[in-house]
Image (cartoon, rainbow, N blue to C red; front, side):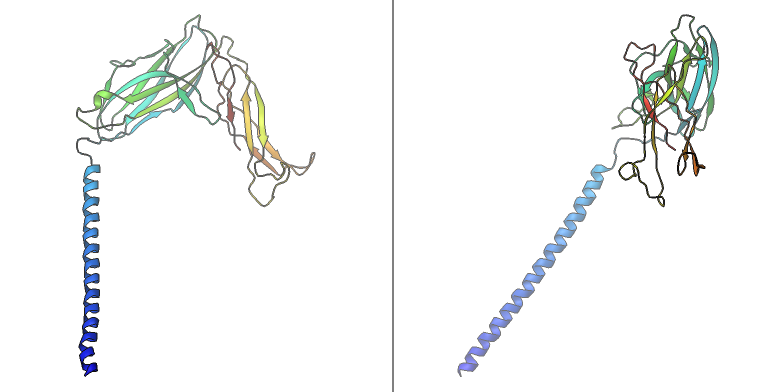
Length: 287
């Protein structure tokens, strides 16, 4: 009788425990589904906030050629250059052209545009075009910019580094937009003014090393060898180096390899007409 009286209680405990387990599983499943739906809702809500509401994207694809111009003129002389400007995008663009001075920023070939007035010997000969005045370029349209360079007779000799910059005019932006980045392209002009036409050009080897060399002397002949060559401009005008690195077992023996030095333009850090310190820039030439 005692067994029969306890058996229902034991069964009841088992049944109660089992039901409690189901309740736990059901609650966990409901909580999981709720959180999952909540995450989906929050994700969609965040995406709706990130999606642009009032800004209209406009394609900008502009090219200018040549990308660099190297010139030498005597004081009192003038010359004309042409540049191809093409709107590669299907959308029309409102543009503005300007001449902006620049200087070497470091020894890696980077430049810094200066917030200074450009020399007054640059002008555009295109009909209806002028510097710092907006002009319209239709989609897929290509024009030529005709640049006139007229050097005054009393202009000081030296290097003048300028950029022919063509940028999107702010008037292109519709009112009410959240934000819109402006695009720009440019041609760097390396202009040397010299009465003789033969300014002093000189270079010095400022650094020459093999980074992977052990103790600065030994290298693994089965690995690719890299050379760091830094040249310093000690002249009075930009210069384009010419030369080679020769690899030979020992002095006097036949060369194993000749590596041509890349003919990068090595500019002055500051141009000679500038009142600032005439420190020369150090531009690398890598093999």
